[in-house]
Length: 260
Image 1 (cartoon, helix red, strand yellow):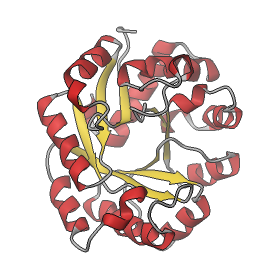
Image 2 (cartoon, rainbow, N blue to C red; image 1 turned 180 degrees about the vertical axis):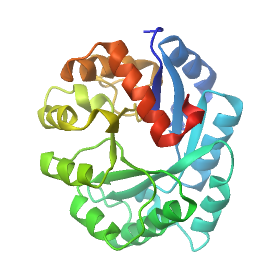
Image 3 (cartoon, one colour; image 1 turned 60 degrees about the vertical axis):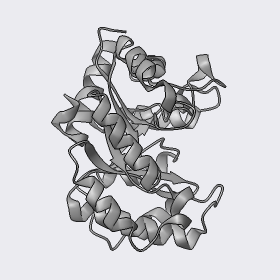
Image 4 (spheres, rainbow, N blue to C red; image 1 turned 90 degrees about the vertical axis):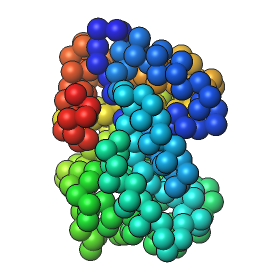
């Protein structure tokens, strides 16, 4: 689909499974129509790596954040470190941050404290926030209830049901999805992404994870994003080209003109 312009709004090219092949991965992505890749940080180290990738490859941008799995490693200096990184021109938002009560690699109370701190940082810096929530939506909504809200919020790899989708839509949030949309048993996810307003939807790979159905079980990469585009376009009764145009505009609206 070299005639489309896709943005992979959430990738991890700095992952050890991918990092040594960045040049090839970026090239293959561009040939497949994926013209922009946003790499999300999960800790200070991977946030810095995402920035370095963006410096080396002009089609890439960075998010800086602390994944809930890594929340226990955060220190009192973490927010200031991210504040400094967020000021760099390669950075387009704060992320990924959030709550994950599926594995609880970090204690829930620690996750909540770190998440609230970084959500507030995004609001303070007037930057978009990209959020990871897994099996913790009630706690997520409770955590942000009395806090200032970042200018734009994206729930990445959205896994909520229609009730949660309606609540988050009413709050003006954006939503991204990747290979999970294509999985055989993902009927609820498809229903949700059919429900969402057209201007709030984004596509991601979350690579190297969650490869789409035709590649399931393999190491995911941005060049495979068009496979998920085909599912989304069919779901929303659009051509791939029209769907891609909408997604591109959405990415620019959310992250800024760097994605043009």
